[in-house]
Every structure is written in C-alpha cells, then in structure tokens.
Length: 425
Image (cartoon, rainbow, N blue to C red; front, side, top):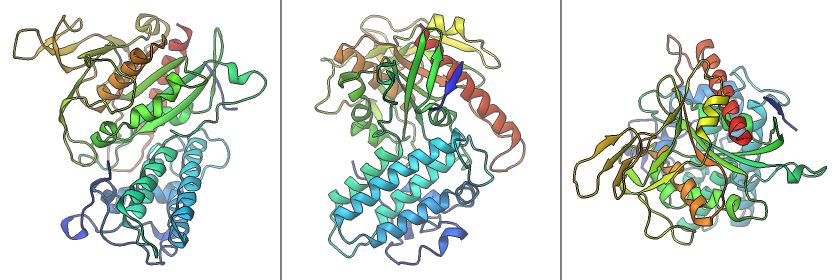
C-alpha cells in the first residue's frame, strides 16, 4: 500500500471530587491562565481527570498544552457569544488539523512524545471543553448556548466538520472512504490509555490510498466513549451526509480497539446496549435509541450486518503479526425463549440481540448505527466494523515506551491494509 498525504455534559462541583478541582494546563501554559475567567466548578467527570500527572505530561511533551492555553486566553477575551463562537470554530478546527499533521509528521513535530500518539488530541480537547464548561463570561450565557459551544468544539476537533477532500485535477471524483476511530477509554484502570483506532484515523485522514484499481481519498473522524453523545445522534449527524450528500461515500468503515492479539471483522451488530461504564462512569442498558429525524427502518431491527467483503479482506491481508478474523459470533435470546445464548454463526430468525460480534458496548453501537444508516438510505456500499488488537504498554509505568510505540505502529499499519483491501473488494 502506498499513502500520499497530499445532551449537556453532566457537571460536578469541585468539592465532590477526589481529584484536583480545576484543570491545570502545565508549566509553560500556566502563566497564560491568569485571567480568572474560569470557575473551579463545572468540569465533567471526564474533564476532571485532566488534573492528574499523566495527562499533564502528555500535553507538555506534545506541546498541546499551549493549544489549550491559547484557547483559554482567547475565550476569556471574547466580548460576546458571537466572538466566543468564532474562537471555538477557529481553535476546534486548528486542533484537529494539528493533531492530524503531528501523527502524519507533515511538518515540525512539537515535543518529544512520539508523533503517532493519539492522546495529545484527546487531552487537549478535554482541556478546551473544561474551559467552556467552567467559563464565567462578562455577559449572559445560558445553558443552551454553552452546550452549543461545547458541541461545536467537539464536532470540529473530531473531524466531523472537516471537508478537506482534495479537489481539482479530478481528485473530487476519486472514491471517497470514511474511516472512524475512538477516544481512549478505561482511564480509571490506567490513565495512560491510548486507542489505536484513533491513531489510525489520524494517520489516514486526508490521505490518498493507492489501490490496484486506482486512488481513493480517506476522510477520518473520531468519536467519544460516552453513551449520551450516541443517544443524542452524534453518529448520525456525522455520517448521514456521507450517505445522502452530493458525494456519497464509497465505503464507511468504523474502527475500535477490541480483543487481545487479533483483528476482528464484525459480521453482525446487535441493537442492545450492555450497560458497561463509559468515560463519564455512566452505564446504559437497553435497546439502542435512534434519534428523531434520521432515516431508519421501522420496526427497529434487532440486527444489522456488515457489507464489507470480509473473506476477501482476510485473504488479501497478511495477518502478520496479528491475524484478521471474520467474526460471525453473536449473543441472542432465541425466539420464544428468555435466556441469552451464544451463536457462533450469527443470529437466528426472530431472536433478540444481546451482543453483536463486537459485544454490546459503543463499538458495537457505532457499527449498528452506521450499517442501519446504510440500509435506511439504500446506499449499496461496503460498510462495517473492524476491531483492532489491544494496545499494551511495556514494563514500567512510563507514559510511553518503545514496545508501546512499536505495537501502535504495527496496528495502525494493519488498519491501513484492511482499508485498502476493503476498497479493492
């Protein structure tokens, strides 16, 4: 393969936290956070982790602490909501673009943290949303207006509003592939966590993938590990234009971190939330809720399926060092029964979903929402989900190490190979 790079967040009071009450921006940026426009209260559970030493080290060693500091400085200087919105737009776009450039090493790479790391973007975004949630402007700003600013920053810093598909010289007519990844998660288990799906998305965004049948342009985006955003329709808002817009996508591939030591091509996605805690320590159990106003199927199906040519992808990829598996397993409650059972070869007629091949967490949910959009819009394209191996650290407790960086690079490389194979097929 050749790549050419051509609802409102729940707030918590500082007094209710064991963690430090306010986000610290790191030594180089600390001097710039002297405006006093930020309250000590109002950060979300996820944002509050930013006060810990590891996130601070990641921001400092990547230079992204300055991105947060510059954002806070401009936000505090905004004289009204209109100017605040412009600050959010400008800094949200810039954060995404700089994160992509850093991972792709296009230009100067700030700091001594490895370039391929997806975590600086994650922690910098939380620094910015925390500032918005704790901001005390000199003018009236109601909860709805604040939430809109946070949502706009989320979209722009995740690539959802990024439309820089190369134009001119026939490029706009090249196949258009959407690849998505996720934020780090399980941070209460290990605050150092990264997510190789996020690293892969950043590595692929805006690239031209040369396949045996010509060139294809990749547009990537990231999603949070939070149930509320999915219930509020973030996935549909981001992906629907790629199914119904002027230039529909030629493939939509969602990616997340999955099992130990293997890649999985998930054949079946279930309409069930299993209730595991997300990055805000919230669990949701029940049928996946579909937002109003988006194309869907009625009644809501229990299952949706991958339209990737999984057997061709398995055959075309080397499977080295991590094997690529066509995973057809599901967990269902068979028709007329009450207890869930595991089925190795997919769901049986009339069954209720309890887990797709990718489980019952947000990775299964994005796969279900994506393929349900495909079916509801009638767009006959490859769409499906890829689970990567788990990315581990080496021995010790360092923020980064050679084994971690090598494994991340290997996983990202294999994701790129899978995307190319999916386009070829």
